[in-house]
Image (cartoon, rainbow, N blue to C red; front, top):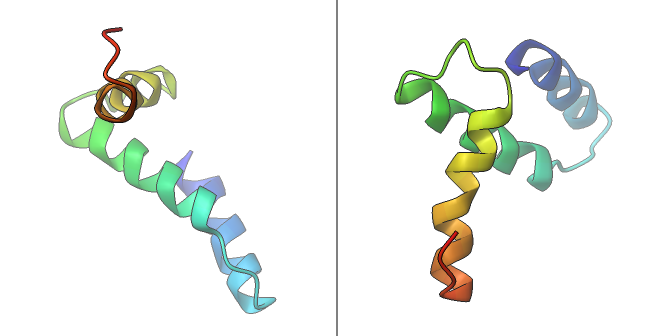
Amino acid sequence: MIAWTGFIVIVARQAGVVTPLVDACVALYEQTLCVGHDGSDVVPVVHALEPRTNLHTGKKV
């Protein structure tokens, strides 16, 4: 994921396009790597989103 995302960000920035959503996704993916989910593709990103969602909604997942 990071390789393709990095390419997308580089091309977008060269074109003068901002990438806030991609930047947020990269941060979430990097967070999952830090806790040892490097072989799990994107599913851990969903798990990383859950606490952030709970902070805003107050709901338990």
